[in-house]
Length: 372
Image 1: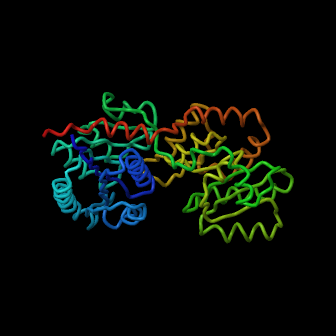
Image 2: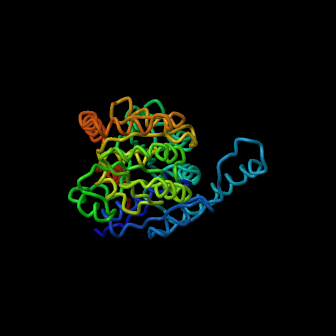
Image 3: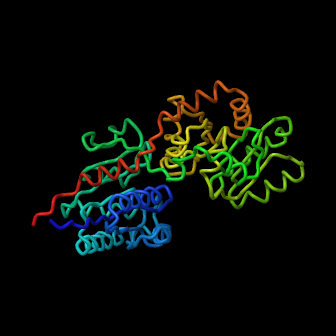
């Protein structure tokens, strides 16, 4: 019997948090089925329209956006956009004829998965957060399978459809063993001294950056080094301060291209609490202080961080308290091996290095046998 070449549509985007898992799932499907045919569906004008082709996949864009909270002209266009998107999604699905449609959240996945369900095509949604977005809550009623990253999602989704798989994690982060030496060379740091890794986010997390800046002068009395990703806008401020106060043992970068090496070096990590970051940190298994960003929809980050803090797997500091607490908290953990070890083993126990593989297993299990 001839092998039937499987086809998949993956829809998700708007933010890196939805696009990254979508691409990771596509890559894992390709690993498993090299001849699989994969098409992405995104929202026109959003970042997936650049990121997906850069990752080597083709993408079609729908004319869709979210409802604005306040009354505006954009809201009057919203019904037209929904109808246009449903119609275009229907045309894409009818011509491409996928075996399974996968949604990772974001505007475009709404119409795409809704039409797929109407056409009787199996659908799977992957929810990254501990508290789902509106799109996935609506789609859950009709989806065949829901892959989640956190336990206890029955309060949002039908429990019979839920599979706890974890979130996809970049391949290079799964293999940190033996990377300490190349990491020391890459960042030109001292192999003898412990490293505090501060992730001000690729866009720069201002509160984290300002809190670290305040405590910098204390570095002189501490036998430790700071590896600090500031984001582009804060880099000149940080560099100037370090030069003025002649502080040594600090490596400041606007963006860290080799996160695997940064993680390999770190003895303590300070980070925002986006779902994908948290999933990576669990796999990395180092002590973490989370400072959730207050400016994200539905305060997802605080909810994500609270789940970990409640399990003793991370320390959470609210954004508004970071300036007074963050630096002291960093020093307290770095000077206390017992707390460090406890936090590290707590977060490592939540790591799901095989998440992407598990999601692919679920996708493949939904394929209907072709009738001849």
